[in-house]
Length: 404
Image (tube, rainbow, N blue to C red; front, side, top):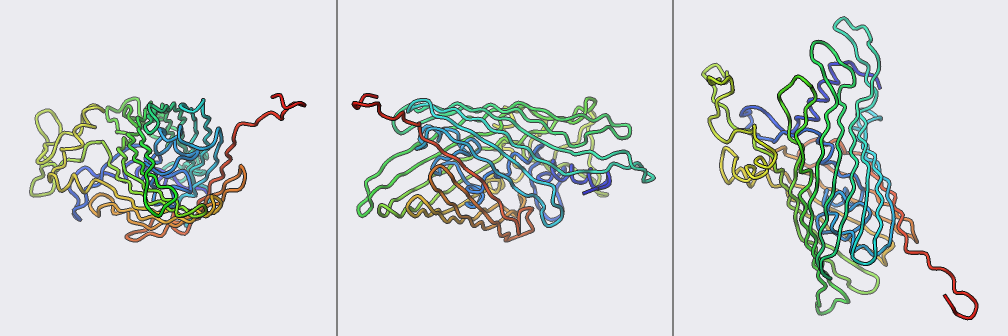
């Protein structure tokens, strides 16, 4: 695929600011801006088939992206997964998110994991103002993660994840603006609660609860001369999950996730009768409603709970809700479904997802498919897949005479 510079700049702008606007839009929407939104894309087909949900679902190899504190409860010793998410497949065929993750348990109480996500934007041909080709480049973004998780009791665990983020949207300098790749270092903090219940008529029942604050990290800039730095998508995700074993062969789980960006809400700027924003003596735009978004990362996280210009009602609109169900037969075959809801004033993403999974011996395969409800989605009419491999410790064969 070869695109002109104008499309690249549009695509970069759309990817980094799809979720935000500077002033009050005419349609009343007030979406929130962050850099590197690829971090919010579900990298695995299991969660993708459940409406992008995973705070309290049963643990698997991809738990590092949703709640790394689940790893100590996984029923395997070590494993890894490989996934690919086609992006904008209806338009192009070389944009997508690839991922690989591996985990290992240390005894019964500890686990470690690491992952790599790589988001490719395809091949882009740069041209100058008169159409002369300047060369082909391949914008990309990637992140490397590592996590440590530990049980604090039989039912409760916590985890800390470190992350390095690299975003190279415009790989060459063009015109008077000096550009460079954006980088950031971030962390996740997660907890997970797993409680076995006794429910009449069920062989087993479990109540789980998960909480994860992801991407707590430094702001990002794409120019050494710019003073503007964008927040990365720090996100609070929490929710419960209820799992019931109807008998030895049939298991059903119902899960709920609530997610909120912990970055400042864009304020409403004062404008004159011609629609131009007022500028104060300090050269900054005058805020009519809301809070100043130019704050530190920690203050921005705290401020995100009370800075919406239209009060508590708008704060509630910033919470995304996902409801999903998963059915397993004999731990071999599963079907999944989920629904994702986002307020029409905060992006208006609403979609159903469907998914299926297979497990045989050490091998696993998951698929997902997305059906948009309110608007087009980059994943519509696209099949997402994930390969999984899970292993138990290999036991040495007994020696003659029964000795180990």
